[in-house]
Amino acid sequence: MENMTSFGHAWVAAWNSHNLDEVMSHYSPDITFYSPFIQKINNDPEGCIRGIDNLRAYFSRALTAYPDLHFELYHILEGVNSVVLYYKSVNNLLSTEMMVLKDGKVVEVRAHYK
Image (cartoon, rainbow, N blue to C red; front, top):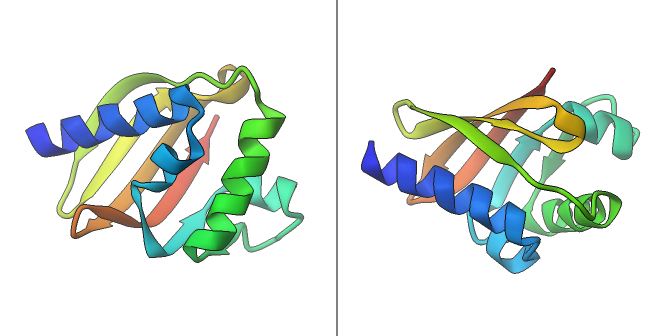
């Protein structure tokens, strides 16, 4: 649990620092990322981004669009080679991100918002 707890806190700290390189350090080059925000921002009905370069461009736009972005971490739930982070996101939305990890890097994300 300590490893996933450390990962979760480091992930939130990276986002709250607005340091894109630090944020990207958590993701694998072959990342697959699903989010309802991708559907809206990228006008993509699949809501999916594949590859680290595409994800970096998307996150860069997000950091620009939300200059006051600050995540508040509520819970870290550990799974088998996965973690779920439950936190307060942009516009006070509640969010969970289920992240599949391989060799310490995130290879798949499924983001959920309320």
